View 1 (cartoon, one colour):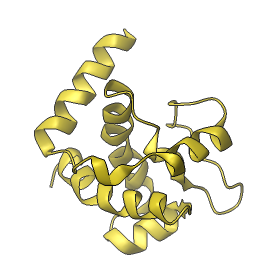
View 2 (spheres, rainbow, N blue to C red):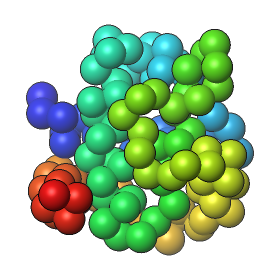
View 3 (cartoon, one colour):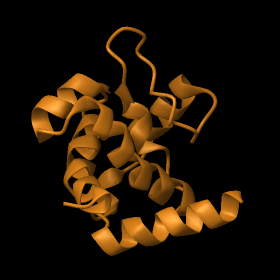
Length: 116
């Protein structure tokens, strides 16, 4: 399974967390998806890119470390994490459908190109 395919599976979990105004630890995502915790961050990358490219609040801000309550080092979508999380909670995620594997792959490429 590709990283983008795993992102497709993670999106609904993050949307549900946003709707419930909650954060998820990497360990919670690991247990829910069967992915090893180090791989979770990698699978969040296409979601972060998709949100950035489509000017959406950074949905990946909801996945945090259990000890510090902060996103991991790969999170670069916002400097103020608490403000980003508040934006995620306010956004109507039900108005957005889950992106496809191809849309995540395209967003990752576009995001990479814009940051070079």
